[in-house]
Image (cartoon, rainbow, N blue to C red; front, side, top):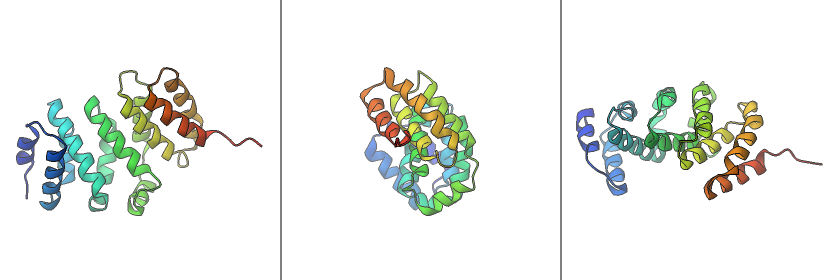
Length: 188
């Protein structure tokens, strides 16, 4: 069993993608508690928090079926994400777990979970000018994925997308056009 302190020592050092993959495999095989990793994404040292969030994304998205019992805890902490470097990883997780392609067990858990805080946070990220483009793109897609559960999203999201697209980057233009094409009512 890898301890939280041992992981903290690992997260204190600079890491690249290879190290993240290697460390996520170690955490998986050592049965590291995902809740402890989630807690480290809120560490006072922003670099440690970023590395923990990167590791969380990698570990959770590669083996979501192994962490079903932690999904509610992950969602409960979503509203607390403030570090820009962590926002990207949480938004990407939100996009994947809300996807129609998410594993059935995740979809079942989300169906019985209050997602209001996550939805509100995603809209906050869309509106805040200082939020990175990748975060906005992932948040848009997560909101789009939740439009059937929360019908008001389908009414609000087009206006937000159009606003973002006014001066948006190529990534926002592309994502916005794609999502808007699905959100526009059919004309007969």
